[in-house]
Amino acid sequence: MSALSSRTTAPEPGGNIDAVTLAARSTDNSDTSSDGPMVLDVRSAAEYEAAHIRGSYHVPLATLAEHTRDLAAHLDTPVVLVCQSGVRAEQARRHLAAVGLDRAHVLDGGLPAYTAAGGDVVTGRKAWALERQVRLVAGTLVVLGLTAGRLVSPKARLLAGGIGAGLTFSALTDTCAMGAALARLPINRGTTEPGTADTLAALRARRRSTER
Image 1 (cartoon, helix red, strand yellow):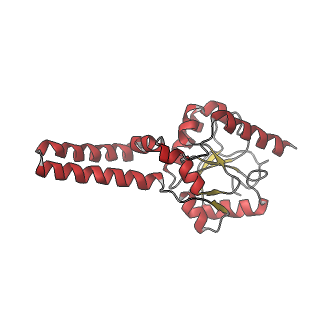
Image 2 (cartoon, helix red, strand yellow):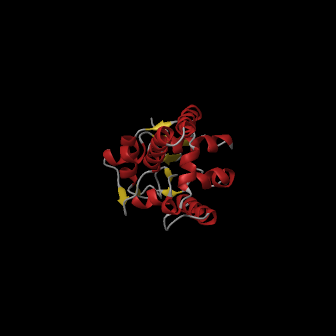
């Protein structure tokens, strides 16, 4: 039996859930916001506006990290954390686990996998995923460092080395400082960046609806 098969089932330790299972569960309940697992999208506002799972709640990773305990207090059902690839969702799961919430599950393959599984996705204006932006910025800086090292000064190659070291550290620690910085840029904040008070209000409303 899946850990998300019923909201009355005793919670199991958090782990991963595959997109097919979540898509089927969401279809069975018709609306993930009222009866199925609570889906939290931890991507940037621009990414969320571009496409998100119908009924999901937008809680950017930075917001969740800053207010983990307050948010966890309103999560009384199984939770599925969603991002583009699973990296940010896993970081969010660790934050929640640190305050004692072990009912959070990471969606394998992120939103692309859910879309491929035929899940109900709401689409809007197109936006680059944060992971793609990181690859572009990192690659550009490496090229600039190597080019400047050849044409200007050999010391400029240190820039490429620094980027390489940063990416290695990112992989080893499963974090991404560059991604966190890019997420705060106006282009990624979009027009619907939720405030903490708005997020908590939405979660409280969802909790009241499931208790009826």
